[in-house]
Image 1: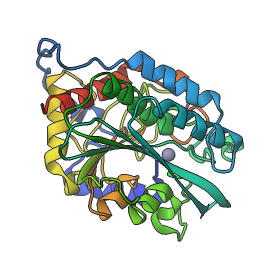
Image 2: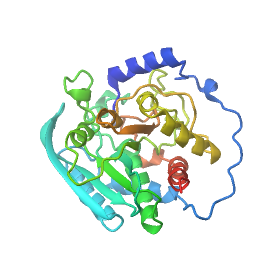
Image 3: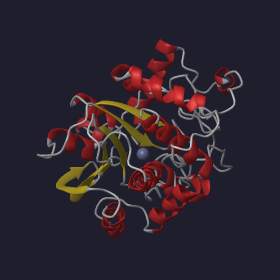
Length: 340
Ligand SMILES: [Zn+2]
């Protein structure tokens, strides 16, 4: 996902405006959550271990950076996964330059799940990975690609596991999946819109495919699989990393666009006892939800801002956690099926 100087400035502003607890781990302790209610047999179970396995599979392709063979293989695999699980599939191909070069071939993958009538919900994540590990403390690593286990693969993994659940037990409302390409090729100072981040989501927002429903609201997942733990060789920077746990605070653009949905999701998470969901905002973050909000879709970004491995060569499956994936996936399952 995107950050850079604009993000740091935005975080600073958000910290000022909202008394956000960025970098202050002690400030975000909440009272002991109530025990989760007894399981409801009509609500399916989200399997965090399966989602973690889906992260490993994606990372085994190599970094899914624009123009790479791993990027091509990932696109084929994604279609193979979705075809048996969803009722309609669309690969929206386009070509674009990034701040790092090109033009490259890109593809957003859209899929529909659920057969019921009703207001569709958009569920989105980016499937590409970043071509440069420019936050790595070792200068020798900064031109290497990011493995993208948490930053990219984690959101895709949760969505694919949800697609399997929706196939087995249709959700009470239609779900439109958007697997977005070209999110993570931004560069601080780039004159391109969004500094070169969010190219795929901006393309989708500007070229909504004919005959496909355009939801009025949705949820974006990014960086939802990390274990949040410290890594010896990476110093913690309080200006970037909130702390060394996995925590999910509501994001600024999401709160502005759809405070009701933020509250609904975080309330479900609290009822389920998922301690990663905290109420302190994580500040304003440039991510794929921003162009979609501008196009009229009231998106909420669920994002861990930021693990210490973010945009380093250590963003690998070893630093991901089935429990983190479970907390997010279980919250979404209960939010979606709880609306029945
Ligand atoms: Zn990123």
